[in-house]
Image (cartoon, rainbow, N blue to C red; front, side, top):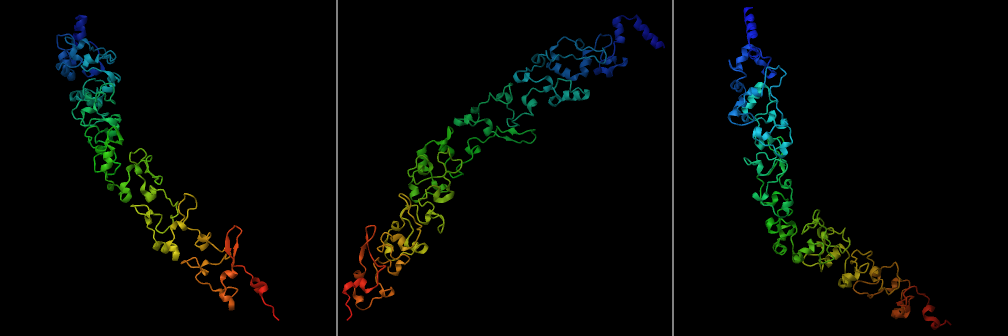
Length: 495
């Protein structure tokens, strides 16, 4: 009771200012752990008004460190005490820190000017727990549970904040982002010049988008794929381009091509004169070895209508489009036989009859004709092929597959009998040695010759008569077999 009375007397006798030293009011929520008369000296010096700056900074070590380094907002408030801005003893709901983020001068307050793209994000887009790098700030914020309140501890390096969206990974080491990028946008690199690299872009390469060569790849430890910019092997065309020649060229790409256009040759004449076609799938031999390149590789400059080349897929714009050689000779040459030999022995292969040195004469000889088709004997051996294998139309190919092997199918125009022996085989009287009848046995006919008849010439009975079409023929049948038919009135009467 005496102690309480003494305190009451001291308060009653003291001036208002002095009374405040005894009971100034409740502390803010941030300092609530210091409430109570026994904790006054943790913030105040005896006999002095206001909180002690030294004791404030003794707790707020992160602020003290920045002030001593003459960095940050608090270092700009020279000659001011902590209490001049940060009041307390106004209750638990009172805000000790009143910070106007809208009017804050980031350059003056932190030394780091916000420009271009950095002006768009809100304060907490950057000032967040994941980006605080200062160990002292992280430790203090952990102890005081103020990660959501502090604005301290951020680094100023680009990668320090943009590590998650850094598409380069660790490819550029210590090189500064500002060597290529501005603060306007991260996606563009307006300050970058490919001419400063080991591979200067020329010709059509200048129009290729970056991602055309610099592909994304997965890097361990990175949250998303990074774009490969550094360490791209320069100077080798195959790094980016698939070799359309499949390794068949001895020359480098630069020997024939330049970056202005992949489909144009630097020196066409030099290329054609030095190109070794034997390195391709089709070795040029015989007449092929003397053909101009355009004869096969230029659809508009072919010297012969007999060449009709089908090109492989994707070759339409190539300077030397590759023929589709899956169909043998027919891939390039028009089949003059129009499919006649599609089912021939050995298949429709041109080399069955023709060679590459010259198309004619064909290698199809008499032995093959006799073995595979029709046996030629006698006068047939000397007959020209075209005499039997005539085209079915003017300008058409020879007709190698004849509709019939009967003599009349070829000798119809030379038939002297005018159809008198329809159904009878010519070989009954004739042979292939000569069209003339070597011998004829009249005894095998309906009228055997006997007596004086044996010595009569054939023409005496078989006379030549005119045919309806104006030609003549020897009449063999039908003939009347009576004596009167030949002898008439000259036959003597019996007595």
